[in-house]
Length: 247
Length: 264
Image 1 (cartoon, rainbow over the protein chains, first blue to last red):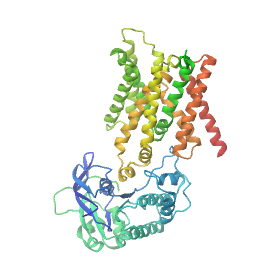
Image 2 (image 1 turned 90 degrees about the vertical axis):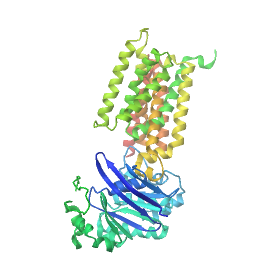
Image 3 (image 1 turned 180 degrees about the vertical axis):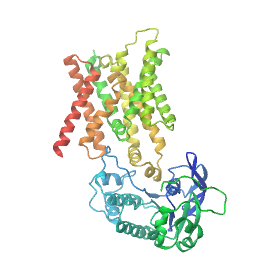
């Protein structure tokens, strides 16, 4: 039985369908990566999976009492709320100081427990968010472009860390990423999203799929094409692709 | 003659009870940027006074009902194209104007409007004290019960959802608490200055606190000192009690500002 699954879900943003006809299931221990152009509904799909948005159609099924560790794209820290790293890691459940130190050590940010959240660098904050996500011994780690704002070495290190954590904790990982070349090497299954699921499978299968090539181009130019492509591709089904993109 | 017959003691108890109800809740108003929402709810209270008199129900009850109605109205209109501050501006001032018109149409024409706009702490009855301290107990009890959840939701709704919390329901709960505080505070500081009692102690506390619990504690302490000091100042100088309490809070804010500058 999958840990968490979506059955034919559809999520609307106002009049537009951000996500439609999407079904996916996450099994214990596997790393699944969602790729897709800007505005393709990746974040919306993740937010639906964690319960932050209710699908307009279809259902999300979770195992009872599923422990989810979620790492958002970024966390906007409002200085109105004074909050140290240690206090933050004690939300929403209070945990022991030893567990907090262990989690921070695992994600490579020791000795910042007493600092204010608002004083952290982008990289530190992402690592603190990851430490928070693994505190409750999650069965699923859900990460939404967790390396946004990190430079290339830092983001490569971050993805290695996620793989290590998966091996240590034995949890499944569901993540969204822009960094195709990095992701492809460290993932079991890739889902290529553009509102609906264009194609999915192992990295080898997906990179060879025509739908993927149309979205991302071929070869080494793939990552660049992500930002460049025009969305005027034809699939052999009948829905349109004329929704807006911010890229 | 028992202790509570002394009107100054009753006034002190009322003012301290209001400060206790406003202290920690005021921090949430600051953290969630609900200052304008607090204003809208407080202004609607005048309409509540008018309706309570018209239908002969108790004034705190009338205020509570209208404040709740305002809270629900704001919630249901928040999907319109107006920005929240415009929407709250419309609702806040419309409800104040409507309340003033409604009060003026009261047949008895004996409503002391000033008492509801600026507070009338020196005529606090034992029943009022019961309402104030009962309200303070409910507010502090709910905040203590949902404390961890409320803090999580302020940081990020998505993180809260992922942890199995329900930010939507908790936001409604917080809204209800603000309505309750308006209902219990109107006697002490009046509709126009209730938001000040929520915001100023919390803002002063933010300047010197490093954690959310410390901030709530400081805010409550600052509110209590302002309440007692303001009340004695009002008696000494013959000034109105509600505004004097808020002046006290403003003075403490300046002190906190100086302390934070000296530390930096």
